[in-house]
Length: 195
Image 1 (spheres, rainbow, N blue to C red):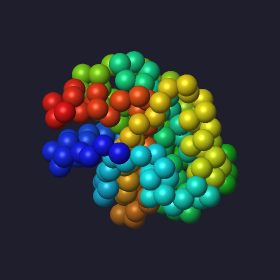
Image 2: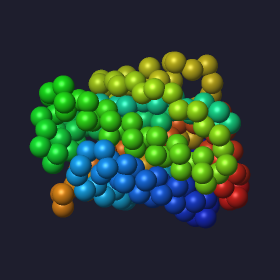
Image 3: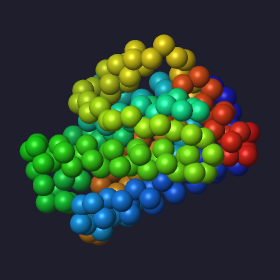
Image 4: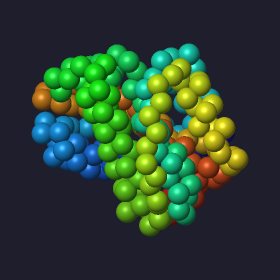
């Protein structure tokens, strides 16, 4: 695995923090609740290690996966465990197992992933084309295997962003994986001026 300098990690963390700020504003406007989103952890690692950090291949997850095309092709995957999904829906006064709950979780994941894509484009000058989201509920290993199988491209290092979502003075957790194809992380760092 490639080693990254503190400056490079800080640049990626800044992208994550800025994306979270944009997403919080979008969600507050859309859902009529006050959202705050912080990023306690942003790490660049191999996809296998990211799966371990997220709880292991057999962890149950709901994922909103968005394919991104353009200068750098990638997948953005927003993930909730069942407990995280239930907690977020509870904070919003919605049953996570209802159609409304599933719709809200899809929209939260979609907004967060799109906000990161937009900030990546703004800060790096990279052109992104965001495709409609796919919603998947399965074990984490199966989710990631299906996403990897959907491309013939190589997957190098990934950016794992843990997010704390504050809603009405209470917190819920979720994670976002930026999975660029080929050498996407290196291209991104170069465009951010920290290669």
